[in-house]
Image (tube, rainbow, N blue to C red; front, side, top):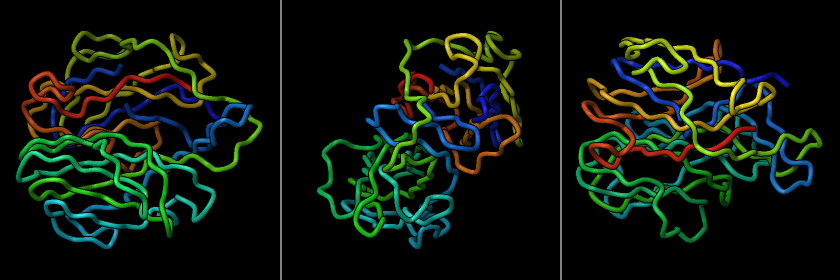
Length: 267
């Protein structure tokens, strides 16, 4: 199994400062579940399931108030048609006409009362959600208020069957490992526009050198315009947006409650 030693962070097309502190960043190949079989293996996949702006997922146009949209999840991109217990997805609300809370849930199931995302009018906001595929391998998306475009990316899936490889999820106390403002774990200064990248090393401290994956919190501060940031293993491009961000705001809830992700742990 490859080791997740270095991560590349990309920004398009905006200058931002970055603090790592949640996206899951993994190299190619699966991360084995715990040997006791309490959870399935995690397999990284980068693909887009739904984008109402372009019609990806078979749906075009902003989602209206109290609407529920159903789309296919299994068998799309690198997601298999069976053997999937749950999906790790990024849900992005794009310029809603009013304050709203989209919710993604298994097709055919009762919609949960817990929102997947709380977005304010006109902002672009992303959050990560773990959701099980529903009937016919589909997911459903509910939009509460106003109208909004929605994009849903897959970062990976958890299998229904575990392997004997071990390597379960290990939580750690939150700790800051990279800060481009101070130069902690990185060169000092914002990540530039038009595809600017920054490669950092995460392992060797609280994340052991043998880690196969890491769950990290990403905070963007001082973005000069609406954009997105991706996190991926060095030299392995990530097709899915990891964090959508509005311009002129700190994307961790400092100036508005936006895209706050809880720092997690490591594999």
